[in-house]
Structure formats: structure tokens, C-alpha cells
Image (spheres, rainbow, N blue to C red):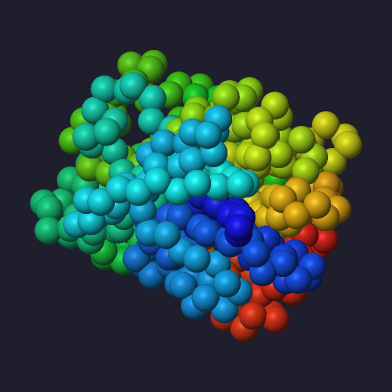
Length: 403
């Protein structure tokens, strides 16, 4: 009787998990194990690029790659995971109202993360975001519609709630995007709002002078030390009582792991990520591995843990895919390790800043760093071709990619 590895999610971690499982099974000549991947669409959404223009173009098809390596794609949305009985309940998507139950011998939870939305008055009704393709496309359409509105301070103002990685990249793009719509001579205002006392609170002191220089030269300003208290159709109220008139409010403050992690009876961190061992198996749960944004995984022996980013998700996926297949067929597992950590932050027309190490030492800025960021965003993070040999070779868990 054949066995089944089921991967939930077609993001960076899910795609590479499926390919790495196929690689290991191909190497050991096991044709009796099915690899199935379930997701709403057979597409990789290039989520790190959704702050850019044309978000609807930030998709890469996966069906031909899956066919080439022998991964069965199941279209649907996972509603329930029964870890005790090793089954998953899947609902149809769109017009498909059917449902099905799929059994598994091993499960890889790679369902990613979603933007964290706290209970702030008006946030869901009036704030935009760049978390998913549809969300970013809605924001882009809204920006283009601004040109049809009467000129006003609010029309020309964008508030970015959150001055972390996504907030900074989004803010750096906005002045040029607004002027493209409203006219090169338009007096535009892009304002970042951050509860912490510094821009990029999680990025540390290393790149901050470069970031603030770039944002200043781009015309971006900021309010620190006070978060957003309420959002309405015409702007935001800050916790300190300040009112900012803005027709466009973009929420970027934080992410949480997929809600499916709560269905696994295991320990989770504050972001909802499942605690895993070095092989990415969920601690205390048989037959379940977690990866990508669903995994609280140590990257090294120095106390560092993977970030919720494609940089880590790609390599976490390779490791999880190899290890889940190895666990099933009795082959040697390879502990996940990703000691090298870098950041490459896009700063819009100004350029970019590139850092190395967990202390984020700046090693590249401006146009040179921008060229690297462009290669990362347009080449390195995209799926491999549908060539079977190439795809399997790139799925090697020992092939650590820094992007």
C-alpha cells in the first residue's frame, strides 16, 4: 500500500518542501510514496514584492513544476487538521462547494502567515495593506482613483502604520507612486506612524542611519512613540491624540502564523509558530512537521531563530521536505541550519541597504545594494523551471540560499 506526504501551502516553504521530498524519494528509488500539496491555487505569490506596483503580476505558476517532479496538486482550502487520526478536511474554493478528507502518513504544515490586525476602530473598514496579492491590488486601484478626487491635504497624504521592514519599503515607494498619479509637482505627504521610539525597531542600530537618510531625502516623515488609535475614511487618530488627515492609510504592523497552527496540539510562540526540533518535526506530535512562517525554528546553536521571511522560508522548506520524507522511509535526516543571516531593504528610488549578521552590519548601500535587491526580487526567489533534474537539484537542503 502506498504512503502519502501531505504539504499544506504553496508559498516559499510549501513549494520547496514538496520539491525536496521528491528529491529524497527520487534518490532512494521510492515510488510507493505520494507527495500531495494542497492550496487554493497552484501559484507561488511573490509576497516580498507586494509593496511594488502591479501586484497582480506577482504570481508564478507551479503546476508544470509539480507535474515534472511528481507532486499531486489538490486545489482547496484546509479547514481542519486531525493530528490524532492523521486526516485533513479540505473545502473547495470559488464556485467549488465540495469538500474532501485526505489521509496522510506525514504532514508538512507550510500554511504561512497573515497580517496581524488588532482590534482598532475602523482598521478593517478603512485601512489598506500589502499582505496578499488581492490586498495590494486593492491599494493600487485606490491610489489610481485618487486623481479623480478634489485636491486636498488628505488626498495627497498617505499614512503608513508601522515602521518595520514592510512599512519602510512601502513608505519609500509611495512618494514616487503618488506623484505618478497626482502629478510631478503635487505636494505629497507620506507619514510613517510607529509606536516604538525608533524607525525599524527590529532592524537595530546598524542600518538605521542609512534608512533615515534615505527616507528623509525621499520626503518621508514619521511620528514615533504613539501608535494608531482609530482609522476612518479621512485619516487616523493617534494614541497621543494627534489627528492626521489622510485618504490613504496602509497597515503594515506585524504578522501571525496561520490559524491552522492552533489545530496542532503543541506549544506555540507569541506569533503562533509551532515549536519544532532541529529536523523541523513539531515537538511532541507524531507525523507532523512545520516549516516557514509556521515554525519556531533555531537557525544555529547561538540562540537565533528563523525570521518570518522568504529568506528563511525557502531553506526551511528544503529541510522540512527532505526530513519528512526521510522520516517516513527510514533515511537519514539533515538538521536544519542557516547560520548566515542577511537583510536587503528596498529604499525605493534612493536605493537599498544590505546588512550581514544578526547584528546587521551595513556592507552595501545605494545603487549597488539596489541592484542586489532587484536580483533577489526578480530572480533568486522565483521557482525553478519545470526541468525535473534542475528542480530536484535546487531542492537540496544543503544548498543554503541567502536572499
